[in-house]
Image 1 (cartoon, helix red, strand yellow):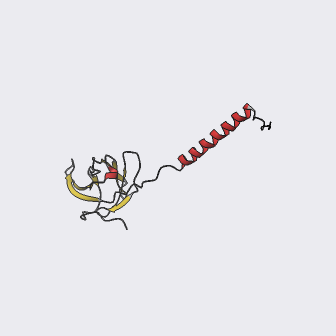
Image 2 (cartoon, one colour):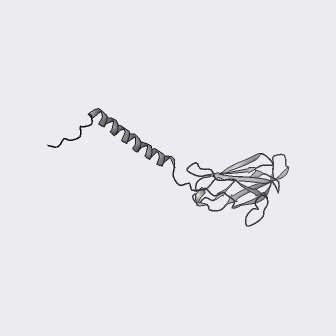
Image 3 (cartoon, one colour):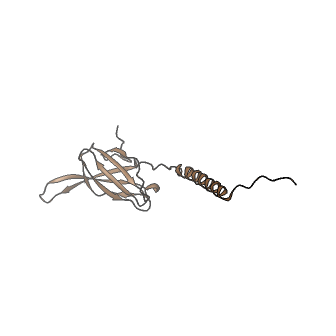
Amino acid sequence: MPTSAPDIPTRRRGWLRLARLAASCLVVLTLWACGPVYIPVPPPDQATFTSMLVTDASGAQRTVWIASGGANSAAANGLFYVFDSERDAGVIATADASGAYVAPPMDGTMGDHVLIYYQDMHGRLSPTACLILSEQRPLAARCP
């Protein structure tokens, strides 16, 4: 009768199973670390500005600006941040379900650089678009 190879002790088989489980977990962890495919969030460079003359409590008049942007499905129900870099001030606007927004009035001077970006519903921030404050239509000019 032929002799068979000696059985691997039970304890050693347990270690081999544990090593295979650890290797499998390492493979899964490595694949997970690669992450999902990155879908870039487009910058909000499709904006227009409208000026409006307002009178304050003292009777002085000043110009305020209202930024608005059309539908942008990536920004649906997100928050838009509109920042006048020359004045160090800005406003926040909430986009509707189509991604369109109308910001509250903000102070500014024609020619100021205005930075606009948004945060989508998943917390991702878009790149920042730099636009020139003016009433140029149909869209504001980008910063040089």
